[in-house]
Length: 513
Ligand code: GAP
Image (cartoon, rainbow, N blue to C red):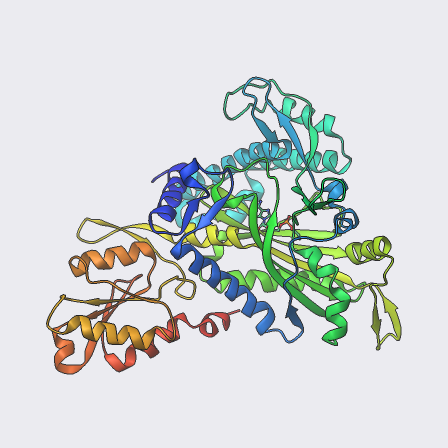
């Protein structure tokens, strides 16, 4: 089996080869951690965004959407805590001159310990066969228990030192664990320092009157500052939510994982405004709802897990990540945060404007609490894309590369293929395209033998191929070939639209939530 690094390299090269993701400004040798989406990438991204939007806004009568500007008044970021606390602890290796996030170095070390546990489990599963009880093994095997205790201790200490801003202890931890620079192997480290992740810019023409601005590092604050506008104009009653998708910018230091961690990326966030004291209930509710949204795409229950935060962000009283199994292991895909009244109360204080809700049931006003769900669109793209890319051994001994994107998200739903470029077959294919293109994206392909065309569409992620052949001339039937099973189905031309529509319709998928 290919190792993780090879699998990830394959994901990156396939994304480029099939028009999904390109390095930004590639002709100038690219810009680090900035990417462009190609002709297929934009469609997949748009479909993911729409799948999220429908689940959030269209299907919940108490959630509405907005689109706030990227530029915001600079005091926003003072109030939100980003000016003072949106920092990463950084450490430099004196020999390689490479800069790292100190917490990531420690977490990567812990991931190696966890990999050892996984290895023990795999070994034992092989040894015990069908009688293997994983839960029992994990809770009784001494070696596993020792590894687990070690991992837990390290994370606990890291959480505590970060919370107490004890950066000297973070460095001490790195030294005690004998963590080496992944590039040079050197253990010659500088002290750990804090580094603010926001990009600064200026608004205005002349140097003296220009105002210092930040590119927003999250979309959430655009929602908070519009809380009353939306609540009043929409006559919203608590509990209610405001959803938004849009670009965010962070000057990330560790940015070597393709579109997993970018400097310019897109978020899909929802702030749910609730009565103070009900946050625990809503926290559990949204954790479950969001996991179900992910599971509805059918990418394997085993590829998701929750990770509860030890170290809470400055605004949260509880937080968990939904982690996904990326080619480089389980990593954060989405965050669910109980943000208390931190943001609204702080904006009240800094703006001097009341941001309160009058609760008719309680007959009093209060600053609502907030439950947030926040997912990176690009990170979701990577989850879907990497999970879908598969190499399959076929019965005839050959292999095929197939991008098994959930059909609802696939950029092109069907390729229409005339078996030959003559005998009136292309005309029928074009007529079918003219009919289908009103409902979903279709593509025409007449080049090469039909088998090669199937392979091309498999690799591009197209879930259906419709082949027009000589029998079509006789009885108006065509073949629908299914990407995942390679099954072929003879159907009436008039049925094609219905058959494919059902399989790609968001309604069909979202009903599983
Ligand atoms: N408003 C809360 C917030 O922004 P976060 O955990 O910092 O929370 C939320 O970010 C999500 O945004 C993450 O779970 C991840 O999916 C995505 N994200 C964060 N930083 C990112 C980056 N540099 N590149 C791509 N996606 C990112």
